[in-house]
Amino acid sequence: FSFHKVEGGPLSPEAVEEQRVADGKRVGRDPDTRSVSLLEQKRKVVSSSIDVPHARRSEEEVDMDKVTAAMVLTTLSTSPLVRSPPVKVNEGLSGSWKENGSAGPFTPSSNNSSGGYWSWSAPSDQSNPSTPSPPLSADSFKPFRVPSLGGVGSGPAGPEDPSLDEQDGSSLLFDEPIPRKRKNSMKVMFKCLWKNCGKVLSTAAGIQRHIRTIHLGRNCDSDCSDGEEDFYYTEIKLNTDSVADGLSSLSPVSPSVLSPPPPPPSPLPALSQLSDSHRPPQYSDTKEPHAGGTTPLSRSAPSALYLIHTDHAYQATAPVSIPSSSSNATGSPSTSFTPTNSSSFSISWQSPPVTFTGTTVSPSKSHGFGEQRSQTIAVLSSPPRATTALSRKVRGEGKKCRKVYGMENRDMWCTACRWKKACQRFTD
DNA sequence: CATGCCGGGGT
DNA sequence: ACCCCGGCATG
Image (cartoon, rainbow, N blue to C red; front, side, top):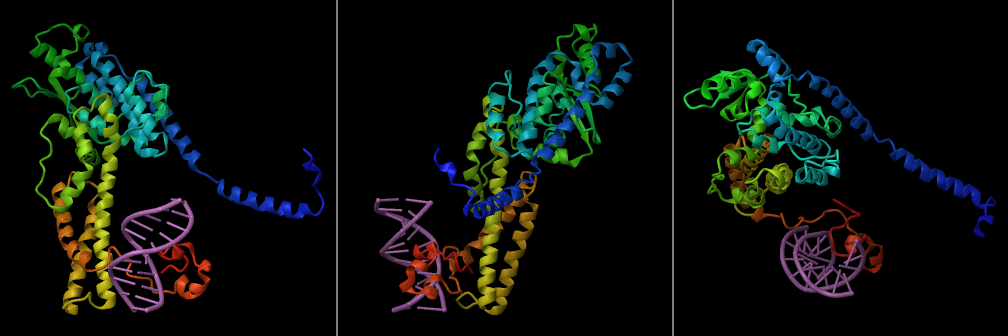
């Protein structure tokens, strides 16, 4: 209270200056563009809602020429909406997937984990718009003969979603299924699963009618169906887009759902063990992609990939940089290595890792390759590692605190040096 | 031996 | 997180 009398006077100039400096720093940092991108995304969402109303009732369409209906549906790529019973089920799920998918990879922000968790544990009362979780889970469902799901845009749309829409959209149009799909160059067909019948139609309505009349022996129109047809046909995608394929195959989830037999424990040494150590938890969870199980799974799946990445990168890098530098620069490591030999060696090491790192992008697809390659690397990398450094930092050449200041002025050393750690002041 | 620093222990 | 030291590797 009594302090404020001390103002003006000689102090003011300094104070002003200080403030200015401080402000400048703050202002300089302020320019943050993050919010802008968010807004942009939101816009997309809004536009996305437009095509939703286009969805039509199957009843009308069935009355119409079924071909026409097929055309309309295909064009709109909203076919799955047709059936009422399955739609209900998938509605909620697809919604949450979409949300999750979008938020997950797109915004790695904090809301990630918590959001995804909520949405899955209690999909019904999702009051929280921020609900992430990788689209992988969607794929797991695709194999199920549920048609509407696929149509809604699960399979290929899952991976794509993040770029298209955003959590907000789903929250806004909450009750809408949002059947938007990649109006890409991708065709969706529906195949009858009735044994000995491989009929393929281009619309869900068509295939349903086919099943209803041919196999179920019902003559009435769609309105009197109980949705049983849904179980007798599946959706197949004639896809021009390779991305979708790659992604769908990428997820380790989908296969496991279809075929319980887990991935065979390959008898590979080093690397296989390494990657396995990361994986077990996820695979165990894989069993139940539904509600609870999915949360950890979906989140862990991508991270697993990253982990693997890292490992590979690390392994690849370590052998390369160390042996090459030590052998090439110094001349030869130690023993009876002829210069010719050493050089050829270093080359052989360098090239594989490079290729490998680049290709790592699609893991599961090139599993065989990856493993082979990695194995090779591991084998090659082990000998040089043992020979030279890895553990020790070889030693810094430049003068360090100790030399510069001497033992007498030990208090002038950088902390690291004082702690007998790697010098931080004179880095090499 | 002097030096640089990792691993590990203490507070 | 800070501080220190044993002990190894290296020049």
